Length: 357
Image 1: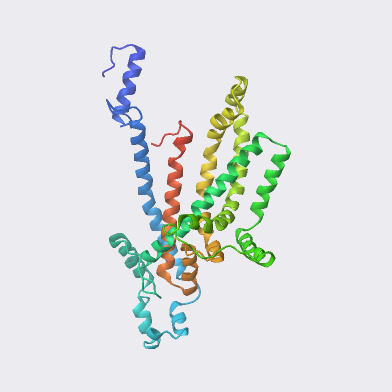
Image 2: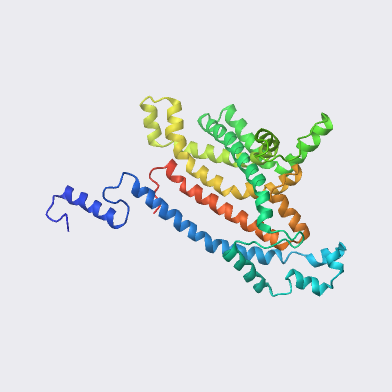
């Protein structure tokens, strides 16, 4: 070995260099932090590869469940006296839609087109590619979710921190009561009340015409503000309580008492030492709430007539449009998994001790 015959300290140093080189943590001559970046990149690659079987398993469940929903798309088409349905018998229509094949064969055909061509199929009613329909609705849903997340964090973090550092005061009781109220009030009820009561009392209601961000950014933000606030309040309640709980736990740690004893400024102790260490569970919670931001937008988009994926999914369920339903679920599932991956990668920003290997 290169460190044979060296002193204990030198041998330990040489052993560390050898270990880092062997495991690829740090290459000779590399800049500081390169090993950490490569380790995080390897971790991200492993997590991305792990998404493949997860998405595959989720696609099997969604594909099977949507076809077990009561009702038949063929019966709906025939009941609406569609011209194409009138000109064919029921068997011909089933064959034309590709529903005469066994379910396992339909699934293999569907998943094969996704893997080989990136094709989510065509809508049974419009005949339009599902990928195009989802891409057209995606900006509204993600814009609503992003704004709701900003609203939730803007409300939850300051109030949660204030509630913790002013424990058992009037501000603490008010914050806890507010969080309980937001947890108890459903977002769909709040959205309905916002649409109904102002129009009855003051003759005003929020504008329901969607304006794309590329067309008018300011008007887009103003139109999305009310539904984003309503959707974000439910998330802010649980995030606020988690922030308060973790801040109370961190504020009792010895290093916080040491910081106070050294005479550091309160803002420095709270923001630099306490809040940063309390944020990891909060970030985890926010990642777990991602499905609510996307899935909870279904009702909000219906109330405020936002042309997002939630409204598309609701229309597809009513029409039993199987390719659209499975396509939306697959895209939403992939988005949620990627969001949770980003949440895991962000841990290193808040806690330097975290290493992804």
